[in-house]
Amino acid sequence: MSEFFLHTFNTLGHGLIGYIIPFLFVLTIVVFFHELGHFLVARWAGVKVLTFSLGFGPELVGFNDRHGTRWKISAVPLGGYVKFFGDENEASAPSSESLARMSEEEREGSFHHKKVGPRAAIVAAGPIANFLLAIVIFTGLFTFLGKPSTTARVDQVEAGSAAAAAGFQVGDEVTAIDGTAIGAFADMQRIVGVRAGEQLTFTLKRGDSTLQLRATPQLREVKDPFGNVHRLGVLGITRKTAAGDVTTERVDPATALWLGVKETWFVVDRTLAYIGGVFTGREAADQVGGPLRIAQISGQVATIGLAALVHLAAVLSISIGLLNLFPVPLLDGGHLLFYAVEAVRGRPLSERAQEMGFRIGLGLVLMLMVFATYNDILHLAAS
Image (tube, one colour):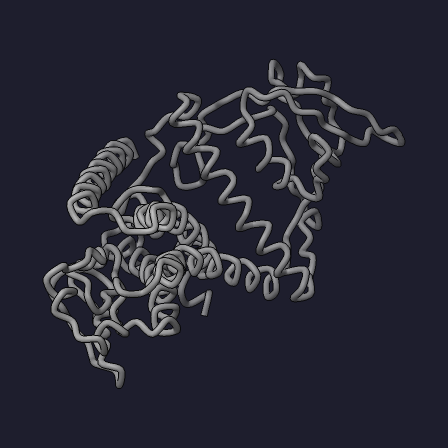
């Protein structure tokens, strides 16, 4: 199947269809599981679910299940929503008029008549489902494909680089960075790539000796195989891969699960570090991308194979989970913020305060979308 997938997208090339199909594949998986998290916990809490939609806008196709939920695919495939009984719109804003007219029986199935705890659990279930999906995908990849690795051996030291200044030599093998064990060259690249400007302590083997060197990775612009430019920390060492150098370690399901959790946490940690860097001025905001960038990357990754595309889905799932947890009204995190205030006050915020919050949240979300799209256009124009 992977070979068929690769052949198909190589045939399509980097044309429009070659971007759209993998983009929809990745986004549909991520959005479906996010909304499924909301849906399942709502059903568990006794809330009536009116609509489960993949996409926004006019309905393209759909059906009603035996519980009265309308499952549908809508025309604009840039997200999705679950609409609960008592919601005025897709953002789960309450309809005060309909809530006031509800009978006691209807209130039993109303989202807005539930206590704070169940409402918070329903809202949080979406982002949590995104993190669980990523863990499951990473675990599956480690289980079925194993863990490929090459030793962190130094085959070349660039003149004038941070590694040369620190005293790295050809033949050195890095075994730890700041006390964290390094089992592969890729492990070292990951740590160094996100620690530009920070002094790191490298433990390495040189012949029969073990020694420590301190080096500060330099921030550089690096092109990936598709020509995309990334700003990363670089030491200035190269690992040449010869036949037999790359090994694949088979792992049992328990180890694969642990690796999946670690991989998920790594993406969470680095994403939060980048966002923090943007706000403090240490990182440039031009790396923030939107649907156009995701579509481009999806099309590029699809040419590598199905496993790479599924891996991208896991990373995107984590990003969407984190984004939705931001304390911005309109997003899941904004609802959780309102519920936290309600739990402290003993009563919900006024309807006017919530309405103002949703308007502010809508403005912030629209600004982020415009900014991300602007970055996407600049990036595509420079490609």
